[in-house]
Length: 198
Image (cartoon, rainbow, N blue to C red):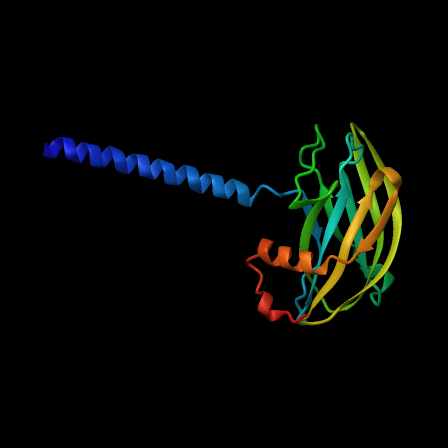
């Protein structure tokens, strides 16, 4: 009886370990499931930087011809030769089906939330770039955009929902601050949000 009981306990323990591993793998997969967002920005090393928060919203098309959607910021007071484009965009990982994998949906728009730390200064949202790689060719279109962004040290600045309707070649900026800030805080749990005042 004791031997059978120990064997039962041993196999039950193995089942529990296996179940826990499956749950852990499932959680890990969910954690890394939204990888379409692309961010390239300089780090704030010399002085305390500020935080910009917002979202990129791309209209879901039945057959989207664009695989990449980027918006660019530039620092206004930097010398022209040292200007660096700060890139925030969406690059579809599933290039064959071109399906969006957003943080959430807002009607027919896929929504990606972002939070980026930048050196303090005056910036400007300058353009939206639509990119599609077709074998050896690279097709691009640019939509002009002009929106000032002031980044203040140790302060959170909301820059809006950057809305892209590629099929109609329209773009705009909407105020979804309450939604975007809350979602960014939930998404980027490793950020010390208490360090940035609103």
